[in-house]
Length: 591
Image (cartoon, rainbow, N blue to C red; front, top):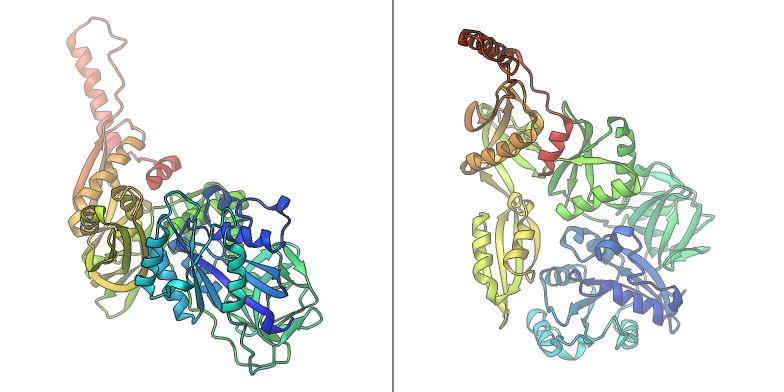
């Protein structure tokens, strides 16, 4: 098709503002899918997406409308999946900014607008859910004007649920979104913006053709990995895969490479023809994981299955990183890096459902920078790797720039919560009469430990947040070891703030006391830092009633039996070992 008749556009919005529902109306009105075949949130094809009501993976679909080819990419709204939004924008010339008429501008709304502006996209602002009885259309329109300097007349009103205003929106996309630019280069250059693995087709790369064209007869080369491939299939999403003979400049589609090694194709790579050597496309910045969690298979013989599952999952999830590790208590597993706790939960659920694995995950940690006395820098992702205190010059922890939008009545609660979590306020402004916008610097470790849930609690669910990485700052932390009967249990070691060591140690030991089975002797549980005990709990011994078979008789007989029991327990305490069952580890790590 003539590139002048192509429009590439993505949908961006805060979570639950109606992106996927709007995509449904597009599919229905353009006749891409028959109405009888439509389901709610058709593009959210993953089982987890339907269950949780959120978009996890970006989805591309081709639609035809009035002689124009519209390539639409539906994107996630949750902050943990914002990297998917950035990748989508690189394959588009325009963005549809959706704002819920009842909720107004939220944290991700602001973040997505700035990303779209950085990507130099044409933005069409849209007020959605105008059919709701509590819709505040005029107020939302004014907020968009005040916050982003949009022209009042360019803001469209639609109801993705009823279809009101959607046909007009399709016409506006054709009118306002520019066609893909005609490139000077005539050689094939295609940007890989997503990948996944198919058992029959091998690695499948979702691409946008920046220049040139590709046909099934062509042999292609991936410029970053220097791998050659003879495509087994070329096509586009409709929304299912549909074969075609070729993809041309400006079009969005897929190339089934036939490659079985998933490391041969990378997101952000440039695809070209076998003998061509054009200038590679800029690609993407590497995504840096923020949160680290160890994942172990409950059955140790499933370790190879876990490795294969992580390899295939990481192909479609560029933000997932993993490296092998082993534990005396838990066996072999992987230290995995994620962008947030929701990201971690989704990955673990996908591993369990799609690959039939039973998994155990440890408590989340962040990556610390440790400057050693010899001048070297060490990155520490878990307490097990934390160096000896005598070798440490100083430690730095990651901080984030946190943006919170909330109704004005919750100002006090949010300030209190942020200050409790060591937050430093940088900005507080009122974008409208009833809303307040906060900007805080906050340690990432505080965000990891239930900050989002606590924020929802103190704001009755109305506050929303977004964050970006802000750098590292010095911190006074220590490695806390947990001793059970004088023996260090490495999987329970953790990195704690100096001023919170007693509180955290005490809480952990109380949990352990309830979980570890009682022994024939008293067992001491200790939390230590640099050999100094900061908290202690004791598990009392199980006592057998040695006098149960004695009725009457001289008191000395009873004392002799009690003394023998006492000496036996003292001996067991000296030489006895406490074997902590795996189930105890699972319970304490889940808590």
